[in-house]
Image 1 (tube, rainbow, N blue to C red):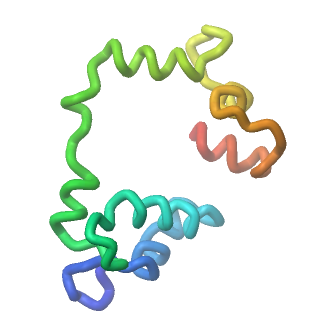
Image 2 (cartoon, rainbow, N blue to C red):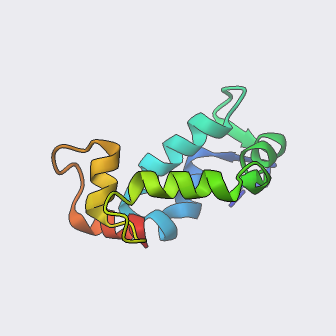
Length: 107
């Protein structure tokens, strides 16, 4: 992703790197990543910021915490989470995104 080889990732590099994964949502997702990971507000993510953002949080997540989070979304308790359940859990009242975006989120 670091196209210019300066050891940092800027917004344009992230957009290019994630375009295949996020498609039309790339810029929205990259802006979220930048807000979360660019700790010093430089407009770039350096290696230390990258390590902090990608650290293994699984150590902090217990089976009980994961089950509780899953149950928050699985409103009908059928063991799966549908796009409609995500909309309900997130309080989405109107169609902000097309159905394909919700299906991609589930995928």
